[in-house]
Image (cartoon, rainbow, N blue to C red; front, side, top):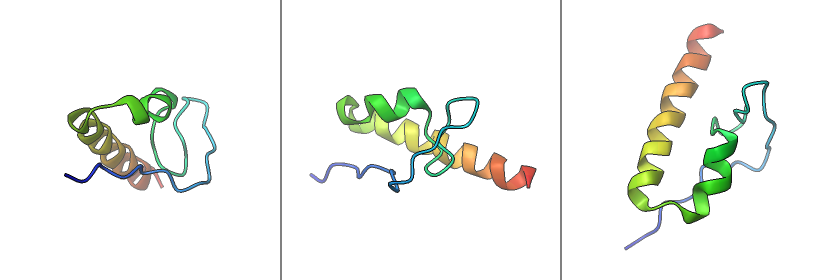
Length: 59
């Protein structure tokens, strides 16, 4: 069974809502990633997708 890879792209920079503008994770999601279960990681990945889409729509 393969562990889900971190979505980190190595360019962390938080906006004023504590969302990384590189990987779209919240500060909490970043700090809790390594202790999260695969199902929790899948939820985080869905959150990332939603945030990325919202960011694209705002541009």
